View 1 (tube, rainbow, N blue to C red):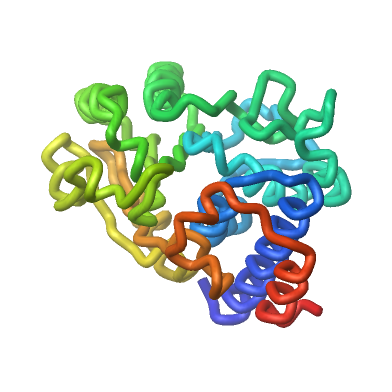
View 2: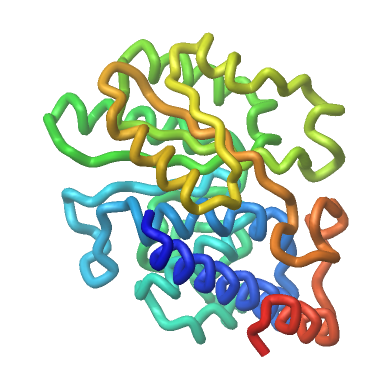
Amino acid sequence: MNSQSSVSLAELCKKIRLTLCEVSQQTKTPHLGSCLSSVELLAALYWQELNIDPLNPNKVERDYFALSKGHAASLLYTVLAYRGYFPVKDLYQHGKTGSPFEEHPGVNAPAGVELVAGSLAHALGQFTGMALSAKIKGLSNRFYVLMGDGELNEGTIWEAAMFAAGQKLNNLVAIVDFNKWQGTGRSKDIMHMEPLEDKWTAFGWHSIRVNGHDLSQITEALEEAKTITDKPIVIIADTIKGAGVSFMEDDNNWHYRIPTEDEVIKIAQELALT
């Protein structure tokens, strides 16, 4: 990524963060901390990596993205809006009766959402099957799954990991938003997590570890992933829950808390977007 594009994408990440906070405050949508930790990961994917077309969201040759950590749906909706799938103003319908913008992506989700999400740890298995199907058919689609570190508690993740490695699915990229928290506490205090790279490597994956808020590192990891020919790829992204807003960072209360109007004003000032 050149320095100019990195700067412009970093500025876009600020706008996405502010929109997330404004929408949360106005619609009373929770899970801000989980959304904020993944902003750069989705920005790099949607503006630097994915073969997609907002004007033709169902084109056959597109790349696929699954938000496995479905409670961060507000981030996915916001990224899709800024990417041009629908107007940003539509985001303020979040959670309203009949709105496609549900707290977790559902069957009536807006254009660009590829998978129903909510109950954790299913997307990797689903995309493993889709990636295998594409390989069998000789298609060029690539499949990207964003998971939270709390999801790694689930056995279905590791079943899918073993199968994907056995099938040498180099068109499958898992990304772990490793913000060190889950809903009820520190991830390491609930299940033993580290050494996470070694675990994935032992399961037959090509493991890459990055700073999940460094756009250049993320982009380089995504480029490296495309050079791997014989195994699936996992990018372990070290992130901060609530990243980008000083009073939310590494504070698990923001898993559910809603910002006040005054706090949104402070956030806009902190992001220099007033």
